[in-house]
Image (cartoon, rainbow, N blue to C red):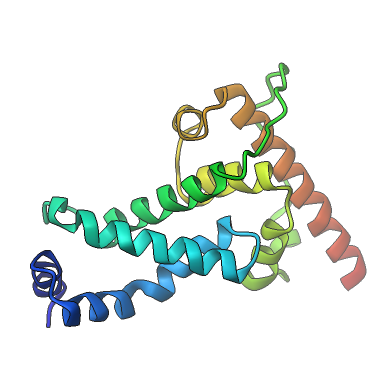
Length: 178
């Protein structure tokens, strides 16, 4: 069955198509949730809520562009809703620093994807949230500000701090490895 046929079946609320669509995308979408969640149980809850929304609004998918991208946006928004319930506080920073110091490419060479994800997940929640939205999901600081109800300058400063913290952690790992 093609993706198009599965989506049509889901629009008609066919349980078999819904199950098949879930199985097709659950792994990828869970990895998105894991980046926003504190632990795997919270990530699974986010995923469940996201798929409820996907199936509720699947009739709005226009078959233009990527279905996975459409779904990913719902998953990210569902994760953000779950996080906003926890009332994260972002410290307002007035300084305007757009870029973090750059690291030499060799520093990353021995760091695997799993290691990097662990470092990102260990960031303070505000840093991690802005880092994921900007660097991984590609949202602008203005979009992040709107999504999180913060100032764009707060988003920028949280990203700078997240990058600096990651850089320090990577440098520490490199020292241990040498």
